[in-house]
Amino acid sequence: MSRRFLTQPLTLAGLVLLLLVAVITIAGPLVYDVSPTRTNPMDAYAAPSGHYPLGTDQLGRDILARLLHAGLLSIPAGLLAVGIGAIVGSLIGIASGFVGGIVDTVVMRAVDVLLSFPTLLTAIVVVAILGPSVSSAVIAVSIAALPSYARVMRGSVLPLRTAAFIQAARVSNTPLHRLLRVHVLPNVADVLIVLLVIGMGNGIVVLSALSFLGIGVQPPQADWGVMLTEGVRAIFSAPVAALAPAVMLMATVLGINFLGEGLGAALRVDTARRRPR
Image (cartoon, rainbow, N blue to C red; front, side, top):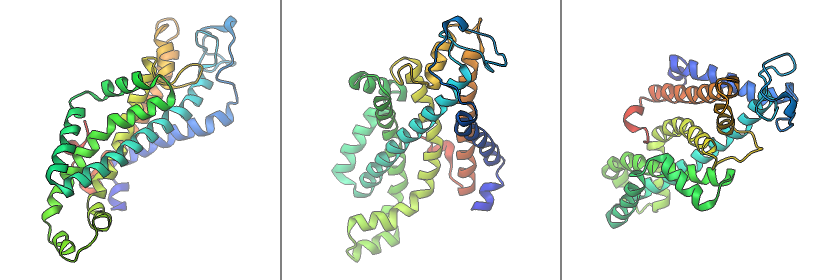
């Protein structure tokens, strides 16, 4: 599998993009040691120069410094949010599909209700209830991602219920928790891994969208969504302020999606059919 994975063109493109983003966001703040919150109103919207490589924003803050530090918040927060949603949603879907009966019916109806709302709308409602903050945005993205993973993993588990090795395990009185852990989970792990990788890009986008709307990461913290909000106000006079975070966000999401598609091709998982909405 590893050879097929590394020879996929999409995998190589995704790895290159993610490696570039990782170097910029991790090594960048160490090399370019400038405060992302230091203001200088006299230099507001300064053009790119030797002193300000990408210029400054409306408060005279260094755009490059904010861009580098924003990645240290946007990427981990998005990955954490999707990881929580994927784990919880997958466990719910696997247990529901395998147990079946009234439990499966009730759980899936609740999942269908959540799936009837767009992901971003669900996240906005959750943040509106909890209040705008980084932790609220992470929880909101987790809840918004949860039903998609539950639905897909349930569909992956259903064919296993009648498999011969599952019936044999049932006859031998294998405990349910061991049956799920030893026999079921390994057979759906490839689907889960691919969905998790692709979903990480979606999580970063939704988290940035919440910040763009002003209900996610709060200033003066640097986040790509916050930078986009501040940048679009002066898109014509200082386009770099909006283009820089947009390019970083696009490169990160494209890299993750390419990596997920390449992994799906290597594992022969139909990502177009199984991808969460």
